[in-house]
Image (cartoon, rainbow, N blue to C red; front, side, top):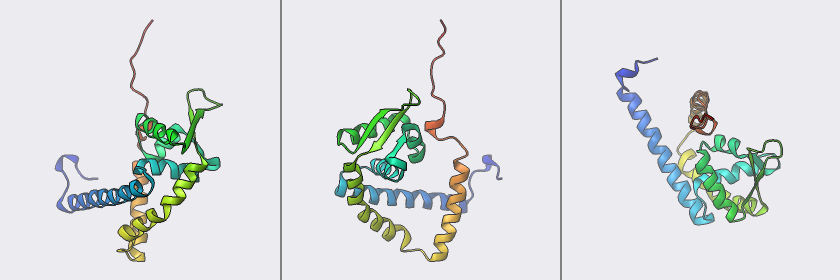
Length: 168
């Protein structure tokens, strides 16, 4: 492991900036498509897509926040917008009164089906078309290891909430 005080070397810095730029460019293009074709933000699409893939189309709000790596309050806001549009429903968890269950509706599933072909096309064209099969396998391996390493640190939504110690 390198000494944190020494900073990043030129190669590390170049890789870091390239990764951040690729991520920003891809997210911007995907977000633009989702807004045009479905009036959805990227985070809203992630919420609907994860729910669509979940068993019975439902997840606990905290599990959803961990999956999309989003704050509890931010996810609550986004879920409220989706709920108002009739794309999801929110209900109390029968097993835990502190938990909220989020469920995708038929309208939410239909919207995912509507935007998915263009989403896939954007991702393929921008991210995968410039790669060879070897590049894809190598990048998948590298990003998988980095993701797994980063996931050992609890996501924001899994960290204990800051609160005041109240006595009496």
